[in-house]
Length: 242
Image (cartoon, rainbow, N blue to C red; front, side, top):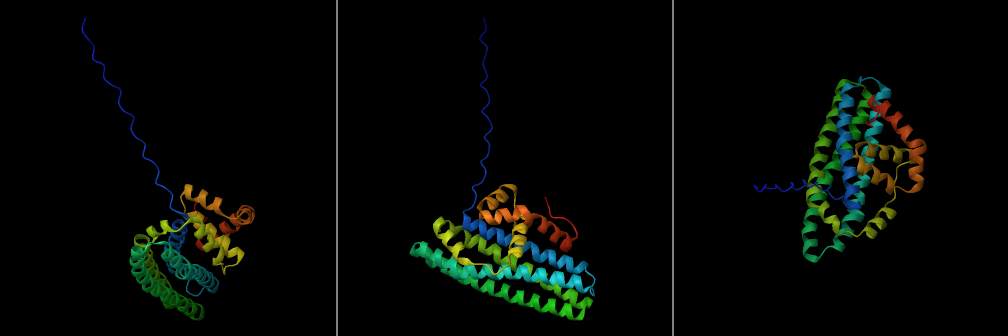
């Protein structure tokens, strides 16, 4: 009787594992970077579509530019005064020396971004006063120039500095966030939270909500989400992404 060859069962195709979530410090940085990169481009587009002499629309766009600018300035101050000094204390001497060079480059890039933020404020005031197409276009161009600078600065930071944040203990990061403070009003904070959540993938969105203080999470659920949706419709003319 002939022997039948038995073909071995194929090995199951390995399922790629999901990439590890970044540490909390890195995740925070990425959220702010993503928000800033998007919002200045959105502002440029919205300004281009706006009627130059629509005072209410001009004021709304100028107010949004001011809010995003304050978020970015606060972020830079947090990095400069708390995050980088804490990181340097945690790194071995040889790594800390290299990190200092990278921080010096970061400082120069951020100084340019901060200067461009002042240019946007000036352009917004001129548009508010004159109501001309030229002033509107100058504001839109200032937003685009700043968006390009933010792209460059945050990209370099994410390559050169953010990987080092893995050396920052979670407890130290908690101390930094507890001492950072925030100059935004409660309503502004909830709007910024909504903006960050809108851009986040589902898994990251869940982690962000879970990390919020219980009072903030409750405020978001009870009124923040609804107010954010209404504010986005007023600003962009369409509801936020689901």
